[in-house]
Length: 288
Ligand code: AMP
Ligand code: ZN
Ligand code: FE
Ligand code: FE
Image 1 (cartoon, rainbow, N blue to C red):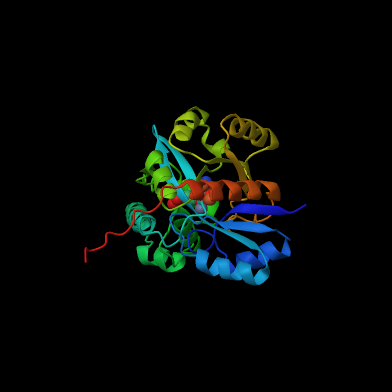
Image 2: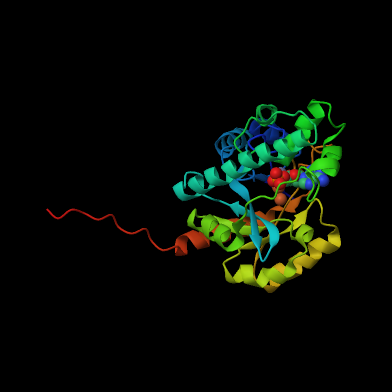
């Protein structure tokens, strides 16, 4: 049987592998299909698509957006988005600016705690437009202020710890619309981590297309629970490891193996949605 991993991060956000390294791992593991879901960016997709084509792997361009609904944080995966979609790219630049400002603010708070970390050290280490807390954690380890990223989160970066800074989040309804106008399918990531099943009907109403039923942090009973909900609401079933490379111990790619039939169902949904999408308005022609 063929398997896929549809939740992966590279160094274009907070993963450690390049798109080529990640593709190499996917190939070694014998995966049939992969999706790149970097936070707030699709920049890695071009290189990943090329690497996958060369390796004979199927590739799905995607992203992971941080959103909120009724004060609940949730992550939305956008599969098959058009990576050249101007509205999506413009919004992502805004999300990336929020991330960069947040890093500066977290560093300022650390400085107030007499930890002389510099924002530029974090940006140099992150070397991407979508920096996040994992980069601050790594910079704290590099500067010998903490002995591990976990310690950095525990002491400083977790919610309500002294250097934690809240993050602006797009509303889930706007995020779903943003993914849709870019031709993508909107899938709720790792619902088992959010414990917000009550909002699923509202998101379905707003056009949610799927649920990430299989995830590293979902025990089998949680996967089964979300498969039942997905079937109840006629949602696509997806899954992935949420691999961030070497940043959290051993690389997770391939540890969640989504049966390939779910990839085919996702593709079919994408095709059917695109074929039913309203036709683009004909360009206005000047009278002659
Ligand atoms: P951000 O988007 O900047 O808020 O960072 C979120 C990232 O931090 C996600 O990739 C999480 O997996 C990671 N993260 C959150 N909490 C922890 C933690 N306690 N230890 C390690 N990584 C964490
Ligand atoms: Zn991440
Ligand atoms: Fe996530
Ligand atoms: Fe993720």
